[in-house]
Image (cartoon, rainbow, N blue to C red; front, side, top):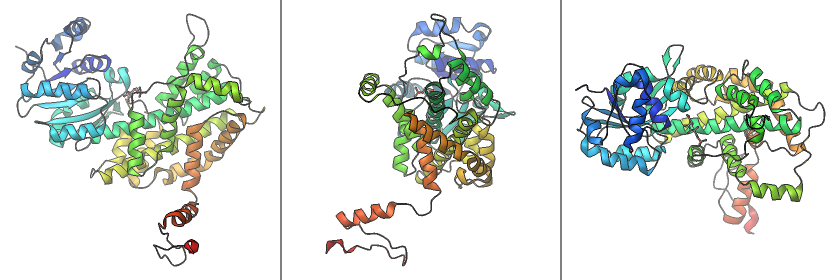
Length: 466
Ligand code: 6PG
């Protein structure tokens, strides 16, 4: 009987695409799904790849179809389903057999699973949506390096390539891969939100049609902003609804879904003490977007603001630069969070390699990431904002970000991710901030003590108790 190189459990959208990718790269793969009908349907639809796919109808059959030591990818929904699947699978495996959780797990779950595991275990973040999974995702690995090395030939073969280099990188022990994937998703949320804010300014502030906005995004995709998210935003804006003949964007409900990865990133950032305000604003904006009735009540009560920008206040170059500055700031926040986690969790997260693994295949792939990789290679611990090439770009673009935030606020158009990034920037470039007032207040009501600027003495108190 033919033995597969690798196994895969879970033939949902991502699992099916990943299985076809593996087969397409010349590896025999055994697959199993909770419902046998789905396994059969998948195999029947695999076309010329079907001979490389071994459909199995029980976990035992799956395990017996894979060559030893085995490697089995789990592509099941994050959460309890992963624990249940591991519990069902592990007793059937030998001591060297490897389980790979390739879903969007919370890295704390992956840490726990790695420490509880009765055998080899990897947690890998896979980005790129269905198309990425099928034709080349970006893969962020976590777990023991020796186990990663064992499956690297398969993972690197199926991954996206940036100028020939595989976008599959080991990030560190235990949950390191899923942690990096969560930050990726946080940045994804912020990038999407900033694009949506700029879209809103064009739509409500400038009265532009969806197709005209789509053309602007298409144009920007040939410049500094070149990225997958700008590219698809252009396509989304340019699409016409077959049923109504209207721009499809105009008939899509303005309430964003989310599965939780952005929220995890924000929560972890707070634990780590490295704020990611652009990501925080993006998660908040998604939550508020769901409150449609409440927003309608707000509009009836307060009006929606003028909405329109005064003629000539903002042009497309202002908006493009605002997005460039906002994007750099958001990535700087994300990388600084990764650096903090690396220290705190005892990982040696490879910042330049993270920028590199995101250059192709993943949702946040963009031209800028190659420059970020170079900047981080120069000095991995420096805030990306201060890297000379990015500092220059921010110097050139920050006034346009400021103008965009000011004019959108004046017109009553919410731009939370752009404006919070601007506030972050203004905080990060002012040596003397205002927390002396906070310290004075804390000492006044709680004798918490403050440090003096002049003498450097700490634990000082004001005369307020008298
Ligand atoms: C990726 C994406 C993906 C994510 C979806 C939906 O990198 O391929 O991040 O993993 O799950 O895009 O995420 P939300 O439902 O939270 O928007």
